[in-house]
Length: 333
Image 1 (cartoon, one colour):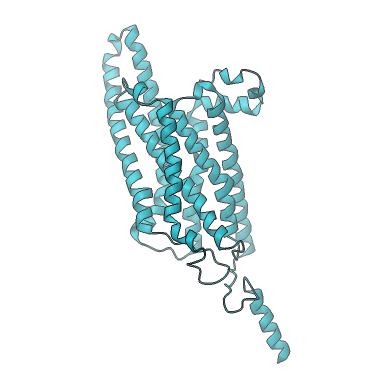
Image 2 (cartoon, rainbow, N blue to C red):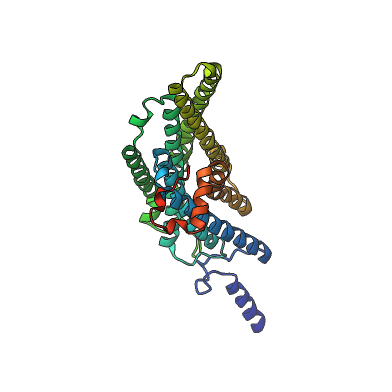
């Protein structure tokens, strides 16, 4: 009887995150080893891929002077947020897959602050990109005076400051008392006001993006028809304007693809919140969160297919030609 009792005690302790805390410790989550290996390998690969690709975007937009435009500065802000997702957020997601959380309550909260900042910065960057394309297409004559490098830098700075402030505010309750919502030791539970996050992080920005791009594409279609009908009577001076308009329309279409992919990746997560449906299966939660983070890996892939300057820049970076003197003046357009 004593041996049987000792064996049962040992077995129960092996199932606990903290065996010394029998009554307050969480039980270890059990999952097949093959499933763990697939998840860890997939997340690690995507994390490395995301970091590498976005680092190429950051170097390209920062190094080559031809790419120092207001629109590309907004793309740089988006690339930085995607880079942080791959460098910090995804590795910590791997830690969240462990059977127990062993890094403490404060680290648990801080590990959720960074994703909140980066996701918010991505959303606001997308809104700013939509505003930029709206002004470029709908008011092209005043675009150079309205959208300047200085103004865009200020907007990007305010974007990151406001996203940081918002993230700390929405997680304030958790920061003041870390572990407040944990039921047992070994958990990492974060509670936020879902309605506020849904409205501020999804409904308002997504509505703004959709309305702006609907307006952009309506104007773009009318401009394209106008250019086709008057192309034969265009003079040399006006042909330059037509070329500029065509480049602006192409940029709008390209960034439209980026925004469309962004919406497809973020909508499932927030649509679940909007419906009020609570996911009970961890695999479903993991899949939806995975789609959100996977968007950070897709953006550079879109650039590679749709932006010739990105392909030229990558070639110069990979071959280390950017280490040469005056390489920043290289023509990549």
